[in-house]
Length: 591
Ligand code: GDP
Image (cartoon, rainbow, N blue to C red):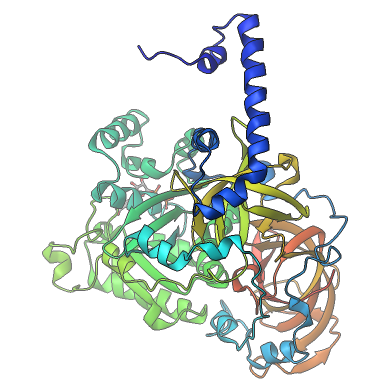
């Protein structure tokens, strides 16, 4: 039997009170010693390229950093219970860039580029959101000041780390029951990411629960409640590899109640797989108003996803009929074009998540090969273009989860949107405008010395109280802070809404992992659909399809960037009464 350490024995309640006290004192001394070491840690780290020379601290780092395979976005984590920061970064004299002081023509530029065009009866007109990304923007120059960081050549290190493979964050979206979890669970199984024994266990358990058809879905739907309800609620995260890429897979919930969770996943994705059910009536149910196919498509596009693989799934249910496939391609293709996807960036693939057909190898079945010679799902994922990683920009990480771990400090998870981080780096959290130290970095369950834009990481932080941090908080470098504000201006595109938007309209502001109550404080102007010129000043109301400049007021401070500086942190969605009513980009940060 494994010999237990005193600490483990204490946890099991096997130690007498005196030993417990001694152990407590010993741990306190170790903690004081390691805190003392931490002060000198940064210099040691910089010289050793991030390798800690303190065996004590490196050992405890790997011990305390947890395994993070799941991003939870429930409960308190959907809100931002921040206190209003007493001193803003700017007042602090720390401000590095001044986004809102851009050229006066900035808004006009964005307006003239026609970023936001009207919606047709059911959806957006083409290049609405697409144009949002194509506008000419001049990012505010950034001052590089961090000596420590100049020590590592992140680009070269990244190449080395990935063994030449590119990183890609992929979100799986689609209507509930379209087969998302089954499809991806089966794909992972075929790739060898789930061992036979585990798969057998899932098969047995799902059979016992009377849900045999969900065995593959169980690979991804981990919590008991998810299995019970048969729906994915959290955003599960897994890693797999293709020929040229390392993929972080996010299986987002399709159920309407969980759309905010889905936004959290989609906000962190570079590309998406949209799963639709090819069965008669089912595709239609997902595609009609109230179905999630359209809303998910619009959401991911608004959140910056430009490349899409559409898995036309459950093709076994329609005998692999070419006509049915074409019918779906026609209807969905038209809609996706309207939603702002370029035709060349959308690929349709006939699949069966249940039988595994056309997932990781081209189908051999003559039913399919007689009319389909295109890529299988894995080949399509492999051929996605990797996005540009903003490694040279200041560090930004938007928190998607916060939790306490054993040992000192606490952990946050999130995707690094820009820049990079090394262990020992000082970080500023906005809000609450407080600093801390990144004691440990975990990437794909492994402790690492550094991580860069595009990586999903878990950071162990010390020197800050966990209650200060919530989901949506942004971590940045103290010298290059992000601003926290409660008031900002934005260009918005109103979706297909029934009630007009008026001054004081209450909304839920969604961006990155944030979901924050807000109001439309001012309706500044209505803009021309294609030229972007002001067509009406101070309108009384905004109706569907309109492009407008508005001022938003949030209840609590939110950390935002101008769209021209950080696309990822400068675009958002507005929701009201359970539906998405607008997409927008930040043009000016007020206070
Ligand atoms: P999700 O809600 O989109 O994640 O859907 P699930 O993966 O949970 O699947 C919902 C149901 O559809 C389950 O009963 C699956 O077994 C079934 N299913 C998934 N993919 C296929 C498929 O390709 N063919 C058939 N016939 N059934 C499928």
